[in-house]
Length: 494
Image (cartoon, rainbow, N blue to C red; front, side):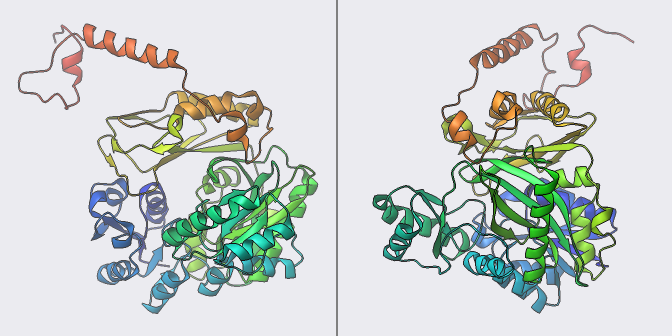
């Protein structure tokens, strides 16, 4: 087993990985940029290394500096988390070349499945149904225009590399193709270093369903059931749940077997996710394989009792899976929502600044994977995810009630978050009934605005508290200091 793991990431996922490492008796190393010097993941680690300035190119995307940090601290393994370099085969290759284990799939697998067109061909060879589309990547809008005519509109322009919805464009007519290709290619080049594109048929109102897989280096592979990931904005998930409201035993078996086939045909090892689209007729199609830990992995952990990060580390160290498919059971229901520092009334525009006050929800069945604390600065340079709120209960109905209660008690002041938006979404009749698809937000919440009655009430409470506070602050005490109980009790004596 590893002695020391460097976590090549930041925020809540770095913290989450470090906590499992601590449970396993493994020391951790954090890396960070200059604006993250007081970030929670830095404080959580046993030691930390400054990589460079805030720009990811100088820090979290700088392979040379990360490898040097691992060498300087004596880390014998590197966990990439998700995002940044997690699906970069060159990074995995350089980790191995430096004598350090990359906690993830083999380099060849990352490279093959990272090429979405090659992945499509590989799945077709295994008999896994894929969405109609192209198999040859290109940067030429004219070629994509000809292919779109053959496929039929609408089509989805997608980058061959990367993920997270970056570089994806829906094209409804030939007139839109030129601009879509240019903007998608430019975004993909900046995000992934590869601007090549391909096309897929755009399905109407599909569900996005994925299967978590685990595979070791000894030929064993299992899946940990499905996750429903249909609630998205800008092609990026914000809510996930398991089991899927639409799942039947027959469909689960068919999709699970397809996921296992995808893992075997690609030679997969470690944790990964096989993603599918499910159309309105109940037909499912292979979408892609994410060769990393997923943001939404906690809901699977909560319903199966399996620590996926622990399994990643054990597999990377050479241990075989100690479970078979029949051992894995799913209990209860779990939902996760991503708490972003974004303004949902302004097209989910990022909201940076200092967190003035933080009060996290608690209680039975509540887990909050967080990367923040009161007083920390939220920078503009990175993905604005603050935390992931996960709740579990016996049924979907009970889980939704618990999630709404947890969100209503989640307080983050100083920046805007999507919490009010999430509360309204969870209370909507369509979501309560499980009638969801990847276009759900555009269909039902496109012009969402916060109920100002709540904001007005909060303002009234604030003014009343200020006017009725028993004591002023002690002389010389800073207005930014948190008042002690002795300053807020009013008249008292021992």
